[in-house]
Image (cartoon, rainbow over all chains, first blue to last red; front, side, top):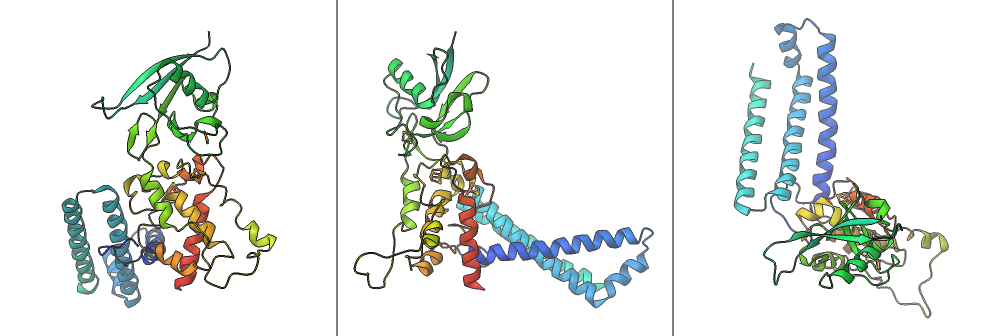
Length: 115
Length: 236
Ligand code: SF4
Ligand code: SF4
Ligand code: FES
């Protein structure tokens, strides 16, 4: 049995599932965003902030952010274990990625509930 | 004039500090030879060339090598199928340590195969004569049992190149499924447990290099997909 402690789900199956499900969420979010922008060609600040003041939009956005965070972590963890053979370099890369994802996530929450 | 230009990877760790390509001219007398025939003719010119072969008919799996960039069996690959710019370029299978010339160390490949416990396991009492199987159940093994372990697929797989110690590779996974799909085998749970981690099976990215090169026309990617389905239905 091959063991790992740095991957997200501790199992290849859950990582694989996380990757699939988060991809679907991100696709739906992206399609929604593009459609919304197309339907509002003269978008102003009031409409835009009105959209994000609604609870469903905040939940939808948070879901997309979390999906993005999970998707990025699983993907970049995989890339690092494929290409970074030096343990120190791999660990440093993973630490930077985790830190960046954490910052973006907290920042995203702040943006959603801040204004 | 029917001179064939052949470029062959040479490396003898006892005398060479680095591998190099050696050029040979082979007179084919206008025939479209198999690559293995060409190698035999080269060996007549230079007996120090090392390569593996045995059956010369695509059965034993000894002469897997990289011919003009594509893995295959030299004995069943015609020069015309692979030649580019009138030049034949022969290299060892990529991704495994070269022992000498076209001979690679298959240790890691066999180790992954061994990990898959490629033999029937059944802990129920053995019947008096043999474990029977319906023709339909036997059909499920078609496309799986024919593998000759030539390693053309695993050594064409980037995931195997990067993690040959952790990723089982297409050949081993095809054999894992051969026993998962066998109705006479009941070690399904322990076989699946061995494959659940992020590397052993899930490092497959589905780019299907394995399918493109298998000289037996087998489809490891499909077998990997079937195992993934089994893992998923087992866990949900
Ligand atoms: S699956 Fe095909 S390419 Fe791979 S080892 Fe078996 S016969 Fe060779
Ligand atoms: S489909 Fe999977 S096993 Fe086959 S070559 Fe691609 S990554 Fe390797
Ligand atoms: S020599 Fe046996 S497969 Fe080519």
